Length: 352
Ligand code: NAD
Ligand code: WQD
Image 1 (tube, rainbow, N blue to C red):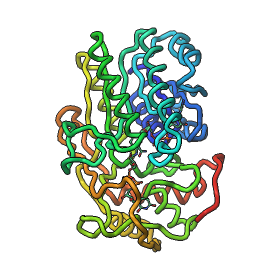
Image 2: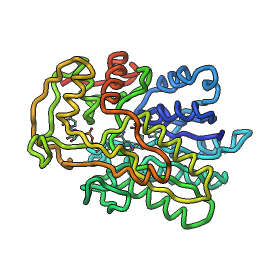
Image 3: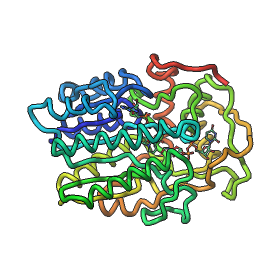
Image 4: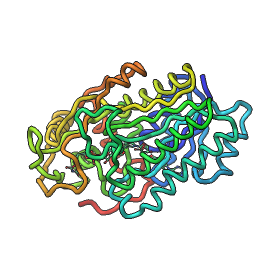
């Protein structure tokens, strides 16, 4: 059992991982400024954690760039913080072209602030949310960790920069235990439908958009191009159930805490690719709803394929995905039906 700081704990992946970590018996401090989430997600995590878990999570409202807040968390406990699971950050590729300063400030400067305070308090264990986006247009499919890191958008550059910073830190002094987890396409929700992905405004990503079409909030899906060099002409992605991803964090943390200090960089993906049209079909099967769509031009910056080589994660962490595409569609749908407007306290915009 460890004492953990979870930054960005109220977000999509953070909330599911908090629950998985509580189930493993850890004590958590979840820090979030709610710029892209709701405090209700963590209230629901407490309920899901049950009588054994709900008292082991403390929620702190704050920004990772505010070192005073971080100092209070690290310095204010009877027991030291053993490790950090660092989700906090901005994550929208399109937005990162418009606001590169914000992306570098939150993702890179925010991580710097966190690492400086960690170092001051002697906490040298961190699990970092990286992304398959660091591969840019991947050279080889499936993509292994040895592939070139060549981001093609400001968001990806911030993730690659933090990976580099963490590598320099690991080289600078002994004792750092660092895991950089390169997620592929996280989707789905906790099977209870109590917590899930709650995007603000029009979703950028396929799964939340399709869910909103199924529930009737959006009229139809726009498929960004059907002329890609893939079997059915639509792009292929490696979708990973968020509960599998949460368990991947538990596995990474366990490895860091039990083994000698080291830096682990690993993909978290299934190794299985599905096209946009396959997602639509599977969603229709899982929900019994028709998903209307139209084909529109390609979205700038998209690649035809993105699929993880999951071998290293399996060998190194003993972790592999367990849930199927149907699980991902069904759990997204349960969440969407129970929470058509997310947590109900986030601003929204007009439907398309
Ligand atoms: P999310 O937006 O749901 O969660 C991020 C959380 O961080 C939010 O709760 C947000 O309010 C919080 N946050 C942002 N800036 C903060 C700050 N300055 N101080 C404190 N809290 C702050 O996103 P997510 O999908 O859960 O992603 C979590 C992490 O995983 C991010 O770092 C993201 O870049 C990375 N990632 C996400 C995906 C994906 O497709 N969802 C894929 C690869 C990597
Ligand atoms: C999947 C496929 C779209 C929406 C993004 C980030 C990546 C990572 C994961 C953070 C693509 C198509 C989508 C729509 C569509 N995030 N699509 N109509 O782009 O693979 O990855 O999320 O690290 O960095 O780029 O995911 O869900 O946006 O798209 O046709 O309305 O669905 O073209 O082929 P993507 P996505």
